[in-house]
Image (cartoon, rainbow, N blue to C red; front, side, top):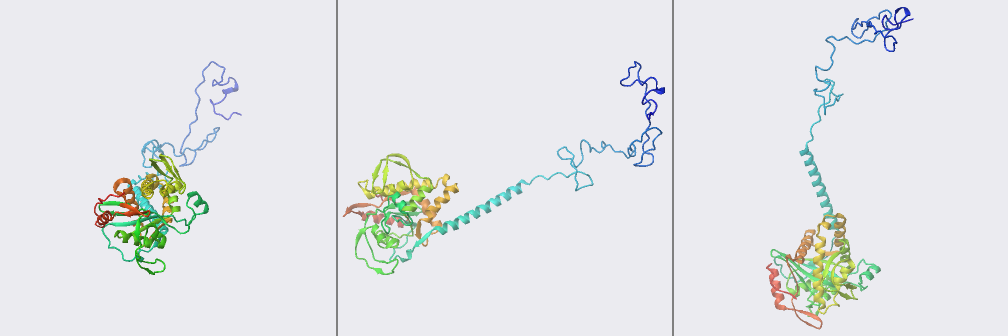
Length: 431
């Protein structure tokens, strides 16, 4: 049975077949009768009743009348429309009125920059405050200058007494062997310097340990007992060995007439640790020398000294004719190189080098009870300035020697002290 209407399938009568695609006949295919589809009868969403012999057709809505919207009138197919973003169609579930997402607001870069700056400032303040308290806790404020009696009047500027000792405190047997320090008990001064800072620049004066001085009357730092002046003539380093920092300050003040405002001391071990923490210190030696006592073995020329080598360099005196005076010059030269190494951007801007360096220095530093981190920082920068050529460095003026002790030039020392007290430019020259 043929369900197709006339003209759609085989030809009538079952004889000749149609002339459509695949027909062997040369005759053209006749026009096909297309069924008429009536839309919209029966109301919206309802299909017209099928004709006899024709399959049911799907409904097409209400036809092509006024209710049909192709989208071309509103521009919602290829362009326009408030919901387009980047040329695409983006439905907006939050706004069913128009069916499109609102445009994203532009970022407020000014607000973002302000927030970033505030965050950085807060972070920097937090790190700075934390670093301050950490550093302050490491200072050993063990020296009480209030125990020093009969002190000279204070002058203009600030005077620091900087001391390097042969203290072996905290050193293992292996450390002592490596650093050639020996195992002597107690501690003595190997280095003594007065650093003056003021409005006319800074001056560093090295005090030879063999300087001939008088031990004045003093009060025992531990016993509180008063010891009278007996006129004893000794080497300057003997004052520290007898009663520690307080007697050393008292002896320097008595023999110079200069008021000491602050005291700073570092031992062998701490000195070597600082040098190692900064990765060594570059030196250019004019001549090589050896000293079995300090372990020094240097060749002339440029080289990088580690902690052990640096300690041997600043301690050596047996290799020189003018032993103590040459050693003080070597100490000043090395301190200059060390200060430059510590203050370089590669150290200051690198926390992995800065904090170990600060820790090594602060942990082994002994200062007076009134020394603040600000005072300590001022001392370091003044010392760096002097050793780099911005100030004056010199030895205490010497006029001769007696019994192996160096005699100070009294006239020059008096003039030097007067210039320092008045914070005048220093015109005196040393040895």
